[in-house]
Length: 220
Image 1 (spheres, one colour):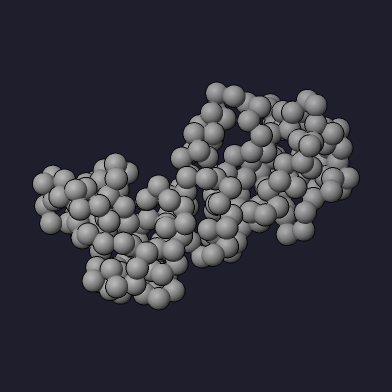
Image 2: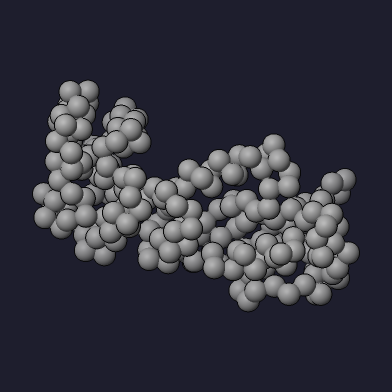
């Protein structure tokens, strides 16, 4: 598989080293000449000096034959531009972007980036294992459908506790698909299901409706 990595910093370097070890063909695009030289000293001729946001650089990199482009610079705007150029101009089938600001995640998905990776969200989702009150966990993104599968835990203070599914005000195009309740088998809720404190609810929704789901199940 031919993979282009935008950004030769620590993330790009270690990612590329791992991909090379797996037998992939990898090319790193990096603007800083000193960084490029350092990568060449360590990994060989796998770094091209240039701006991954520029069409000329992407042409030189042979982006039209790339199977995947991964943008891991520290600048969200640069990562988005690189992924959009790869997807729409060079028809790269798979684009992955690092995101520094998790608020940009929904925008990236709307604009066609296949996979987004937010270090902040990864840390928060791991905290959820240790801190049961963490409000919302992303389980899966269905980018091609514009949907997400999330998990929301109902706290004792939630106004949803004691109410039925039919009584909740949910955003359109959102479905509560599964309830995980201590002491019973997981079950699919219906309009008469009464939610209890501690229920973990699996929902399918659109990224822009996450906050509405959170408020409906946990309160403002």
